[in-house]
Length: 154
Image (tube, rainbow, N blue to C red; front, side, top):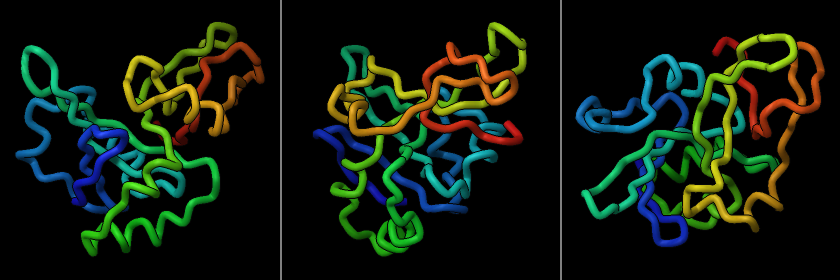
């Protein structure tokens, strides 16, 4: 695990295949083992825990950082395991939540990575610099939820 920051927000990053300690899962919002197992070694995302101080205490969110610019994630993993500063690499990615989404046309369910504009580090600038899709992979409906990644086997 590597602790970094994005825009001043603390983020714990996990290299491909790296286990999240069971103590770290307790109280973690949006975490499901099923979701983690789909993305644990994906070539365009890395699992993260985003810490957001709120009035009621520290809220910790499970999600992924997605890169659409071809960032070398094997090098990212090497640097993460070595405890190096990942802040610059994280700036090129976008934080996404993992969501099961059903197409309104064909009713097929898919697991997707969604960049939620309500999260402070999902800035308009980062969204403009990122590549998204709005097409259902089953029926090619072009009004599907805007997503950064679609995961097979989700």
